[in-house]
Amino acid sequence: PALAAAAAAVATALAWSLELPPSWLHCSRQRLRRELVRRRLIARRATEEHIVSWPPIETYGVGGVALSEPSRLWARGEVAESMWRRLSHGVAGGRPRVDDPPVWTVEGFVSELEICRLSDLAMFEPQRLRSLRQAAALPWDDPCVVDLRRHVASIFGVDESFVEPPRIVRYSRPGDTFELHVDWIVDGSDSQLELLGQRVATALVYLTDVPIGVGGATEFPRLGVSVVPSAGMALLW
Image: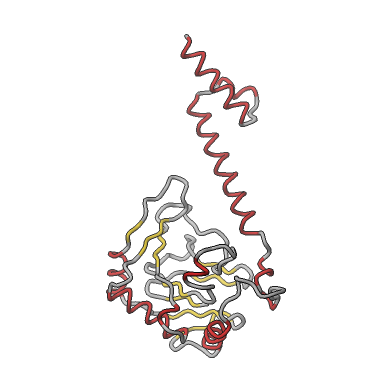
């Protein structure tokens, strides 16, 4: 009886903490746990949406609006100008998706053999219960990874040293996604600014096909562009 009373007290306290109606005080602890997990997930998503939406994207220079004064967030001008010029003038074998800002796709950016090798090299982190994706590091000194970085560097017209170590992201469960975000570093205190500098361009290489109509596209909502993944294709912007 004492144990049952303690369990009832815990359930009552949990129900009150969740601000549930009185009817929930008589439900099972399992149902309360499920509701708690559900509400935490909703709160997490709301927090992520707030982080994504603040500060406004315009603060960081989109649409011709520059930062009001020099900042740690600024990229090296000569690197940014070189990449922008290269993309604006065209990419060999590429298909333009947007002219301004320049967005390109390149079919056959990596071969089937390279896809297999990169997939085998991926060292994925365990996917947590509420995680929406898995990420994997790649060994920087593997010949396939070295060739990929050199290929990306040549496309953007920069030295290989300006290309970050590549990572693989895997979406393996229904509902997995990458939330709305920007690729450049928005936190001036981020140590990556000191180590690698500000990002000014992205090369996203797809390692699998995704059937049309099931989701999985890369969306640029402000540009009205949606790119459906195709194995071996690169998306450059």
